[in-house]
Length: 270
View 1: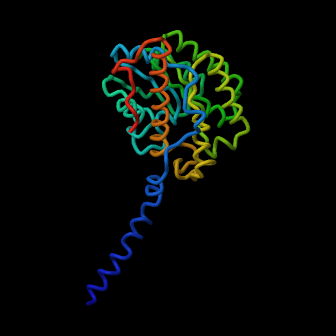
View 2: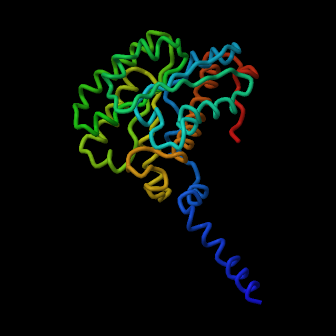
């Protein structure tokens, strides 16, 4: 009888123990990956990417950036946004050969990335460059105006290589938004994208949407340092970014007046 009672007690508390042991993981499984509906489309089509997909040629994407590109806060390199993005795009374009190269280096600012642009990015002959930029300039209180000039310079160099460009602005995180220049940097990156006629993925607005509209606590989508993203947020950014890239690449084919082939046509998201 005593054994039976002990077993009953153990079974009754097991769900509580399991939930208590993994509150963070459990909470993440219940969160919907969403972004602002008015910011789910790139302003510019991705013409080179579209041409490569339509022709059935391999597509090389290079992710340039700092720690939130390299994957700080993720449980492994496979959970970084570039790795997750490659998986997303392969799902959307199952007949295509797509690779996403991670060229993120923690702590870098715009000028650091410019200094290695030729050696680590353009040397790969990318069809698309995703440039995450601005966070470290804001965190260190450096000039956002100078950063703007450097971003414009870098975008022109990438475009001169023939690659498509998508800029990615800073993360909406406590350590960033407390800085006076945070929103100025976001505005300047938006201005740079418009001035240079390239795409912009509004990461700052997406993460603000999670927190302000979906009411998701920062600790659910950020690592313990209050700055870097975690597995859930990297995966969500990759999912949303993958959708915008797929739309912009297939839109570019339509803009050119051609009917997308089975190779270029994106499969619906699952």
